[in-house]
Image 1 (cartoon, rainbow, N blue to C red):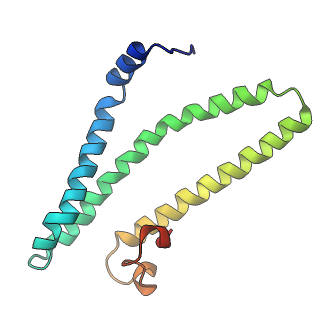
Image 2: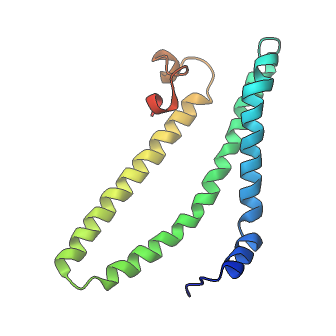
Image 3: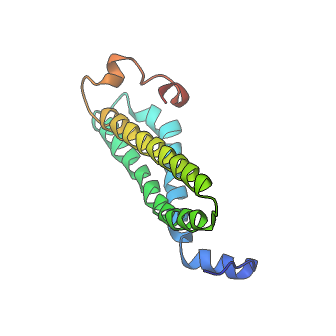
Length: 141
């Protein structure tokens, strides 16, 4: 591909491509934040179905993962970069670093998946047993 530095052309390309999806994800995030901060506290003590609805609404945040589909282009970029390396030793080191980073990303994705399974499950889970539901996200991570 060509590197386009013209702001007008890149803006138009973004508006025609990912803008609508990004706008929907951001708006949904704002609605969920407002829901959790203001509305949830008023109704959660009176109704039984709202906790389930809140969990269902949180699932919609997974739409962000669709956005990460753009990361597939990174593979082609890294392959092109590796082809430009002239030293065989540097190429081997680069391959090893790439494999380690890939393993770290896959470990993160699997851990988030298992956390999601436990977070959206009812009853006794490893999150409730270890009393992690009231902890900060940083501590949970």
